[in-house]
Every structure is written in C-alpha cells, then in structure tokens.
Image 1 (cartoon, one colour):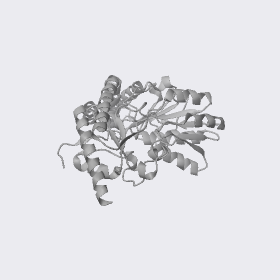
Image 2: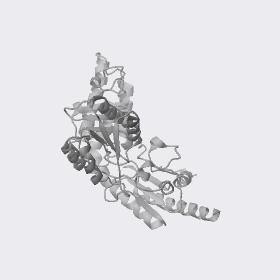
Image 3: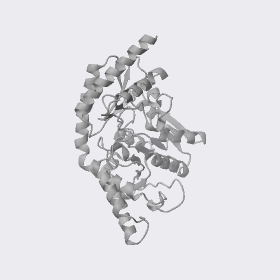
Image 4: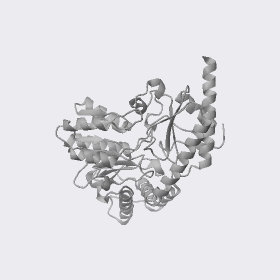
Length: 385
C-alpha cells in the first residue's frame, strides 16, 4: 500500500479548513457557557451562535432571521418535509428521482402514511424532465423538493428557472444546497427559494452542524419537543464549538468561493483530460453542460465499480460509488438507475470528487493510476471468463 494517499471523496466529507479548526479550538478553550444562559459566559456563547447565523446568511444570500441552525442537512430535510405535511391541508409533494436519501426516504415514508407524493424523473444524463413537471403542476402540487446540485453526478439544476415556474403554479420549493455550497454561486433570496437546507462538512466545516433557511413570511416547526432554542424551531442545547466551525466555514465561502470555483474547474478539466488520455472504455456520466466543478462520475467498460474502489483503495486512492449515507449497501445507486441504466451498468459507476486543497498534479497522477487499475481489472476478468 502506498504511504501517500489521494483523497477523492470530498462529496462525502471534506478535510476541515485550518480556519475552521482554529475557530473551534478557540471556542472550546474560551467559551464554556450555554448559549441559553443569561450570565456573561452564556452571552459569550450566544454571540458565537448569532455571528454564525449572520455568516451563514451571507454565504447563501439570505436574511439572518431566516437561518435555523441544525445538526445537518439530513435533519433539515426532515424538518422541512415533515413541517409541510403537518401544516398543509391536502399536501402533495414532488421529489426528484435523484435526491439525497434524506429526502427520498422521507418522501417514501410520507407516501406510506397516505400523503400524496410523486417522483420527478430525469433523462439519461440526469437532467430533470421539465415537460413532466409542467404536466403535473395542474395537480395542485404544494411542495417540490429539488437539490441545487447532485451529490453523485455533480449535475447542477436551474433552480431560479424551476422556482419561477413552480411559484406561478402556487407551489413552494425546497432546495437541498449541501453540495452546491462553496462550489458554485447560490443566492437564496435572488433565486426566490422558499426553504433551503445545508450542511457544512462538504466544504471544510465540521460534521454535525447544518442549517434550514426559511423565506420571510414562512415558518418551520421543530421536529421534536424539549426546548425553545432557535426561537422554538430546533430544541436542544446549541453545539457552540461546531457552530463556531460553521461560522468560519461560511466566512471562507464568502471570501474564497469564486477563487475556489475557478481553480476546481481547471483541476476538473485536467483530471478529465488525463482520464480520457490514459483510459480505454471510459464513460463519463451526468450533464457535461451543467456540473459541479469538483465532481466526476465515471464508468469503465467491463469493470465493476466496487471492485475498482477496493483496488484503488489499495493503491492509495479514496473514492466512492455514491452517497456516503448508503455506504456498505450492495444496492446500485438509485441516481444512476433513475437515469435509465440497468443494475449491471449502474454498478460500474464510480464518483471522484475533490476540493480546493487537491493539487492539479495529484489529480493527473491519480487519473493515470485509475486507468491502470481499471485496465488490470478488465484483463483479470477476461482471464477468468
């Protein structure tokens, strides 16, 4: 096994930024109070939380009062969907076929409970079928859940255009922007989104902290009882250390997102060019015209994705076959299946994702090694047949 590893699984989680680590350590050492306490230690903790709220709002173009700090996007997705069902007469929810499991599985549960739900299909490139949506908007749809960018293919959806169409039909829009944050420009207010959900560990923040962003005039209720924190929208003592990390991560997005995006686009181009040059039987999946600058979903002819991932791990390259929330599952990716691939073809998909600290030379060398391993596995398979 190589001593120098290459980490190409940023869409699962990203290495913590140095500024994030420093902010968390400072709060851990100097801010012992509970943010709900009225004494000075508590008020110092409260200041950390409120500063983070402003930073998160600035990073996504929202108003601070609309930001609810949560334990992550999975919690936030549950919060939005379940609140809508609790507070809406005759709810009818549409979710895309390629959403994260924290949306898809909630929608499936709601459907089993008698809620009217439908799944919005995609084409072979993972693009949303807009004609299908137009036909369904007469069915009194009340909420549509659509991610800004897909975690497996990297596809970026036209959220402002989708929001405009849905609002004309009277539907609310929930957008999971977890993978888009820090990689492309997202503006909550300008896009007209009603609910946005976020997690910060995909772009250098700490795990276990996220946000639900709510448009002015709308509400969101707590998932459970037990306290009045976050104005009654999310009970439980705030994790001030993690919140400080989210604050630093959000500040980094505001200051460096444009620089990061440009660098990632250049690095992705170099990685894809090297894969094409070194590989045989390569298929890139997703919408090449609208993808995140840090994500490549690839399949190699005659090579099983899980076999490739295990072999790459021994070579010192960490990658994945899809959402980290389904790690260990033997099932093929629901995203690739939704794009029309059969199970065998879906199992060939491997996702490579990287970030601002990934070096260009590292990616080019990784592409060479990936192609080498894929060719070796293909030859081994041919010998066994």
